[in-house]
Length: 310
Image (cartoon, rainbow, N blue to C red; front, side):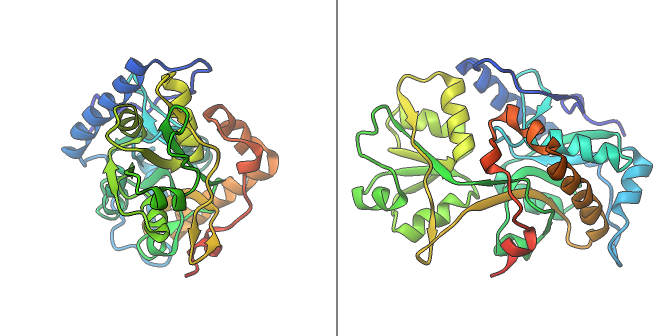
């Protein structure tokens, strides 16, 4: 069956100019519409079929000629733009790698972040392409390629940062109302620091609006996500803080993000990794990610195996 009309395999490079508030809202609306359509149609997925000995999904994808990517609508990792086309750092990387693996077409399956792992394991899509942080809890449910980036957090706060929120401990000490995304690692970091008032919202744009409207005091997200939404919205009511280092059991944490695969599909994961490592070595990976706001300092040699250790 052909993919739904709302799902296109075209991937658009990010614009170099700012994105108007209306454009950001349109992109979120497009994501929701595409997700609703995609949820009713699973005919494009490729079954794992009780994969053993490393799985056979790669061969099935080659025969089919396409791979379906699970997206979470988070800029700049993977989202549907205002024109209805898939964009973001992860889909762009996926398009390059899967073409080299003999799978010429990539298709989006938009969903919310908290549903990505469930959707992957229920075969709604073939790969999670959402810049997902790699941690031991998630490693019990899926397998990860080595990460393409490392990242600290940042906050969206009212202009001038009136409460002086620069760390999760600051949020706890001030009794501030914090928001973050559904299923985000920032929830755990805030709880670790003693934050009591935590609200979850659909995405970073909803977080920006909540801060602007005074419904929350701070929105926590990855540094690149926070900076992008503040810059692109051209808001005059909120700002992004500097980078924030989260702590777990008193130790600083540097998060890394990568592609996730169903646990049996080690052949596909390993083939993906080989191409990813070539791109890291040549500098091609940074060239792809830089237009989405990533920097050389955010490139990483950390492995998924290291981050999966308890």
